[in-house]
Image (cartoon, rainbow, N blue to C red; front, side, top):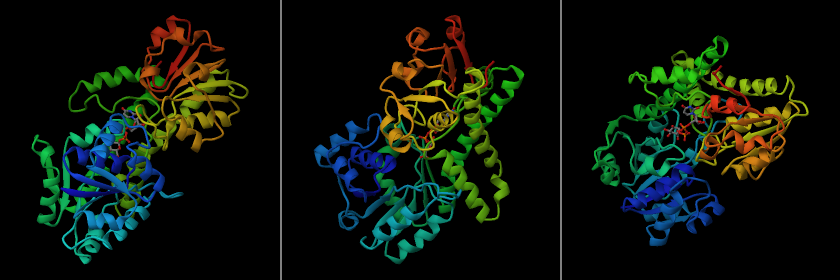
Length: 432
Ligand code: UGA
C-alpha cells in the first residue's frame, strides 16, 4: 500500500521505517527541513537501536522517502498516519494540541475523497470525535490507533507489538488500517477494536498504570528508608506474585521522558475539564512521589559530602531519561545534576549518547568525555541512568581517580556488598 506519515520524531520516523519493512511504499513528512534532509540521507537524527539500519535499508531501496510538502502526501497516498507530538503546555498540566490540529488541518486541505486518516498521537479523550467531524467534512474518514512503543525498543515494539488498538466509527476505514497491518495481525497479535474515546483512553490509562506502578514501589522505598528495609528485596518478593509481576517495579530515581510525566498531567487536566478530576486525583500523588525521589537523591549526595555540597566535586553518570535513548526530556538525571550544581557543587556529567542533547538544554552544566573524566577527583559519584557500561562498573575502575570513595546508586543496579567490600561508602535509594 502507499501511505504517508506526518511528523517524523521518535514515533513517526520509526513508524515510517517499520511500515516500509512491512512492504509498503512510504512518504514521511515533517516541517523541519534539516530533519528531512538527514532522514533522506538515511540518517536517524536521534539514538534508537536498530532504526538506522532499517531506515537506510528502505531509503536505499526507494520504499521510503521524506519531504516537507503535505500537499505531496495528499497526492501520494490515501492512507495517512499522523504522528506529531503533544508536549505539555508551558505552565499548565494540559497537552499542547497545536501540532495535531495543524497537521490535520493542513492534511485535510490536500487529501482525496475517501482518504483514511489515522491518529497515533497521544491526545486528550474527545479529540478523535472532534477530528472525525473535520475529516468527514473534507471527504475523509478517521481511525484512532494509539501507539505503545518504548524508546530503546521502538523498532521491535512497532514490528512486533503486544497489541493493536483501533478506535473507529467507519468499518471501511478500519478495514483499510487492518490491511496495512495485515502481516503483523497474521502472526496472532491481539487486535482490540473499539470506539474513539476508549481507544484514546487505552493509551493514557496504560501510561498512568505504568507511572503508578513505578511510584508505588518508590513510595515503598520511602518507607524502607525510615525502617531499614530493602526495597529491591521487597520488589523481588512481591513480584513473584504474578498478579503483581516484576516489571516496572524497579525502585530508584523514578520516571522521566517525553511520555509518562506529561501524559499523567494531561490526563488530570482533561479529567478536570470533564468534571471527574477525583477519578484520577491519585495521579497527583504519583507525580509527587516521583519528584520527591529526585529531591531525596540531592539530599543523599549532600549527606555523603558532609552535609554541604558547596565547593564539592560531583561525578554524574547518566543524562538520558533512561538507557538506550538520547532523550533528555524531563530527565531525572539532569534534574538532579542541575539541582546539585545550584547547591554550589561542581558537577561533571557523562552519558554514552545523550551529551549533545544535554549540552543544548543544560548549557551551564559541565560535561566530561568519559566515565573516568566525570569521576576525576570527585567527592561523590552519582549513578543516575542505568546504561550497560555503568551497570558493569567495578569499584577498582574508579578507585584511583576519585577524591573520596563515595558511590550513590540512583538506579539500584550496583551491588552494595561488592562496593562496600572494596572500601566504598555506598548508598542507594530505598536500601539500608
Ligand atoms: C512509555 C511507555 O512505556 C510506552 O509503552 C509508551 O508507548 C510510551 O511511554 C509513549 O507514551 O510513547 P518510554 O517513555 O519510552 O515509554 O519509557 P519507559 O520504558 O516506560 O520508561 C519511563 C521511565 O520510567 C524511565 O525514566 C525509566 O527509567 C523509568 N522506570 C521504568 C523506572 O523508574 N522503574 C521501572 O521499573 C521502569
